[in-house]
Length: 416
Ligand code: NIG
Ligand code: FE
Image 1 (cartoon, rainbow, N blue to C red):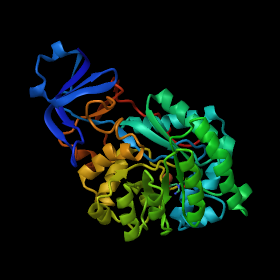
Image 2 (cartoon, rainbow, N blue to C red; image 1 turned 180 degrees about the vertical axis):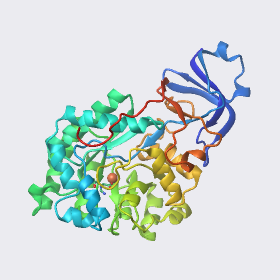
Image 3 (cartoon, helix red, strand yellow; image 1 turned 135 degrees about the vertical axis):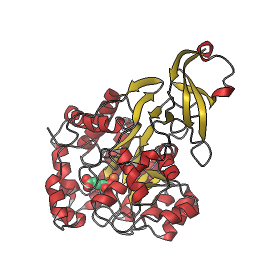
């Protein structure tokens, strides 16, 4: 007998290339995993003889729990002043070169301990969860010392465990050059390779290694050193690539068989082809594009043409994307990048799972995968990217455990 059964609603299984929709579906769960999914008519028995608990979806849609595969949501401080400067005309690059940007968050984050960082992350996670997120990726990258990067990654684990979320942690020591190493970036890269990465690997602090290749961050050669070290330690890589300028980031990511390359506004056709050949996923971050008032879109048509899967994420961070809503990111991906509803929905489920190396763990409704669901009171799933500021989530299920829709805390940002 199964532990639980959900029925009387529609399923989006994400099987095949589309939504894998089943109009009158049923999904069975035992020990936190999906054991059966299909048409209700194929159940082969009365529901209450098949499962100990029978949950009525009441006509709602059941999708895989949403996955936010790119966030920087562990950090202290905020950058509201910088936002005002940007709205007055300063560019992200100008602010960064003047010592603001990522470095201002580094100063605030270094001053906070693990408990404080976890406490600050809690309402941000609650905001994502209130919209159906059951798996989140969280990066380090605002510590830039061995101790502070480790503290960020520990805080991520603490906050996600307290929230009951599935977590993937990315070590982003190569986010920017810390002030102490301003004149000797290669020494900082050596520190990443010979001190930080070995600790991260030994203590299991991260599931992947990320980096930022850009004029205001690291050169392709420096990133290659970090990726070589990560690869030697058995850690998969991903890359913030071609966001502000074309640094050949997409091809660099592909060269290291990266799980993903993210941003990609300035990626060349050759970069797209390299990603396709390597199986590297393109992560679209329309929140950063929107907040930076970018006008150059990532090459969506070329990704489609080459069969490069596209994920969508919030990039939740205090600088370029103070966005705590994956539904809003989905709307932006549609409106700003013209992604289809199906692309967007796959981009926050099965494709996002692949970015995190969790393709066989979550992100689809199929036997053997985790029973992570989001349940939506909508007539059509295209309503999810369509509306702005309206949340039709009924509730989520994480590893078979149902949760009613949670409300975010009153304050989701800042230090207080
Ligand atoms: O994904 N591009 C670099 N990293 C972040 C921004 C981080 C920040 O400004 O604090 C991003 O946009
Ligand atoms: Fe980012």
